[in-house]
Image 1 (tube, rainbow, N blue to C red):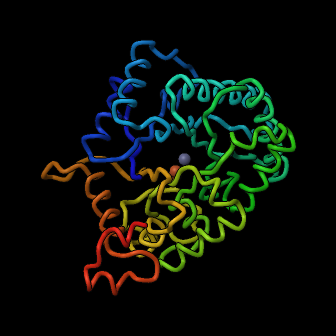
Image 2 (cartoon, rainbow, N blue to C red):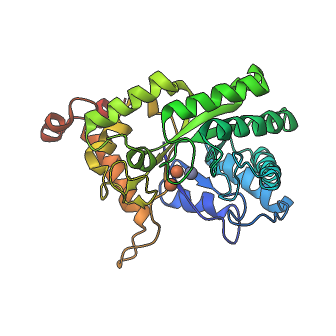
Length: 312
Ligand code: ZN
Ligand code: FE
Ligand code: FE
């Protein structure tokens, strides 16, 4: 299930229509301007149209939203923390209104207070958020990060610890409301060597041991401009960065991610001939799936084995 992060400029539903025209299976959006604290309420007509369009496409339950870059639930600064909670509540409520099933969120940055204090701060924020949005069905997906500066969530252990802390604070009925998002660019920049097919599979197996692949609700498919372990979060086109095509082959053919929305957050635009760059990246990903599943890549490529065998 492949998708792309697309713009809602002009009209929310534009993102759905663009995704459809690109031949995608789903889409990720910001439900509002991601760089502004001020929030304009959702327009009723636009929201209704989004819901109807989503239903027409049969995409209920598979669309994704990404939270605002301004939100920092780990902040030791009380004003910023309160503002962040208020904006995150808005994010959750918008997803509910738009019937978007998954909300990807960067855990936050401790900005000097330390990892433990930062994680606890996030957990306390969710204690409130989950209570204040009780009954909402959107799953919050904690995303791994490249780990630049004081950002939390660089390691799978940190993500798993955070989820545990949230349950300690908010109670275990929060279990179904918190999952994970795994970003391949971030993982590579954080130091997970997924530049080979075996390395990518090993990374997913480690994710399974530490966080549980059954809780992986979104994958971000981005190559990395930054080197392995550089902690630089710069997305590159599929196969053109440090991860490379072999790494993506290992990810997209892993059985655990088959039914998970896999979103490209790669640079947008068009070739001089007018082909959307998303089309090129999508083509590369689909080709990797055709080429062969785990442990059979080169042999299958030569023999041209069927797609069915590769995508299981
Ligand atoms: Zn993100
Ligand atoms: Fe991402
Ligand atoms: Fe990123």
